[in-house]
Image 1 (tube, rainbow, N blue to C red):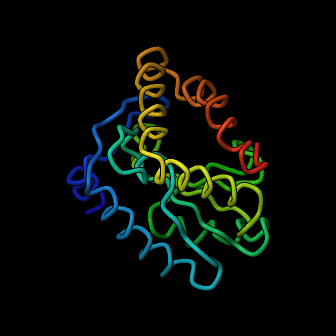
Image 2 (cartoon, helix red, strand yellow; image 1 turned 90 degrees about the horizontal axis):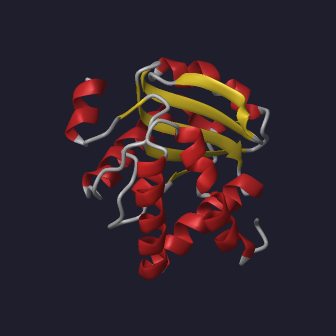
Length: 183
């Protein structure tokens, strides 16, 4: 079921690689379906759940992976999310990839990723950064297009290295976050 749904939403990128897809209005629907599953699985552990990342920015190309931000009371609560998230198809990638972030992935382990869930402290630094950046791009179409242009060039340059692609976006992102003192 998950695989069929992911294909119908145009989701999935081969492990550790970069591929951008044209904006897809169905990504929001894919997020909403996933949010319901996560809310049911985590119950009161999840104080808030938000769609973020480029698939949450209407009209721009994105890696077709749904990024989900899950806010918990304390960062350590992320460990309590492991079993319920595994029960709905996520594997725990750890808390050492992104500082102050428990990372979960869904897709075909070692082959593709269709969803990434980031469990962070609700209203903490990572929460505020991710929401601010998303909202800044949603509210400024010219800035969103500039980000898209950067991503297109970087995706060509770093097609086989998602880590290098992500790192190369850092200066652009930090400049935007600096506006709110979040860089």
